[in-house]
Length: 420
Image 1: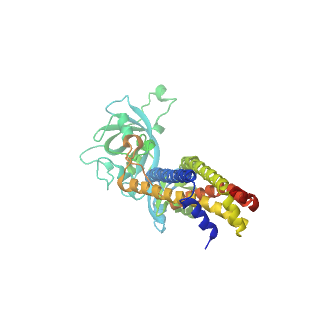
Image 2 (image 1 turned 90 degrees about the vertical axis):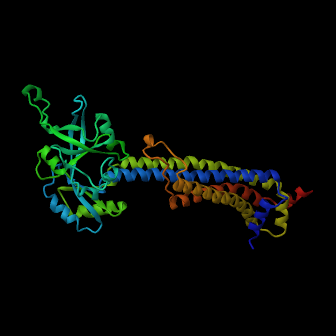
């Protein structure tokens, strides 16, 4: 039997133990519970938000993108896509034209805006994008672009907030004209008028990412080639892989196969600062909330110091009965670990219960028009649990060392004098 552990438990649970110390011990344990539970909940919510944003960003973008270094269009994109279909890790590949146009509401010519526009192949693009899942009005399993049944115009899909800005909706007409057709210096002098292209709005999309919903529009690949006057070429090839976290490695392999003039980039290179900021924010919150555990741990140290002072005579008796210095030392270290360990376990249980309840029942709701989601997203990660437990126990152990050393240094004779 471990004598030190037995005595440590008796000191904490004995009915003869000081009531004042017992109350403070429970308060200290409560502080650890609060700190650990808060850490687990906040880290899980941060993971949930990060994952939600990542899914939305990646859902609208390619896992891997191919384009030319010199910015020139890709002419042999059919052969490249056929070659990519032979890669086992590649789920799909689709040609895309990424350009900029000026859009004008035919309803109100005063509403003019320059926007990014993507020319896409409606059959292949759903293999590399979640656009079809974000359509608001039409069949979400099919992207309807190109010729519109019963109409002369071609179809266009606008971001929801872009459509609101232009005050248009499905069935309304807009005019597009390409930026490259505008000669700023000569337009007025020579009386040149850029050629306009009428399009009919067939749908809106709302991805949940404001920068897309407020700016982007989609048209058929053939229509983009026609209005830009570039022929049968594309600017990009979007690729989706089975596992997004293997995209960097697959991208490196693709770069070895598709060499210059092609440039291969993956999703981690699209928004590196953004994801770095989320990660930095997560650890800043972790450090801040760890202070709760630290304060509780200092309470544990205060309890143990008072316990040493109150039980000085008992320590002397234990020493005369043959307890070594290391055994006395371990008694008080074990007390700190018992209080900290119990608080950590309870904190983990409470934190897990709260996170599970939020995942299962959406207990906490948030305004969807502000945060774009209706409930707090939660993603519990094992690595976060292990980190919280390790940090909590390390802090509790560290604050137990000083009183344990103080108890171990007591001389038996001087300690026994406290009995008299």
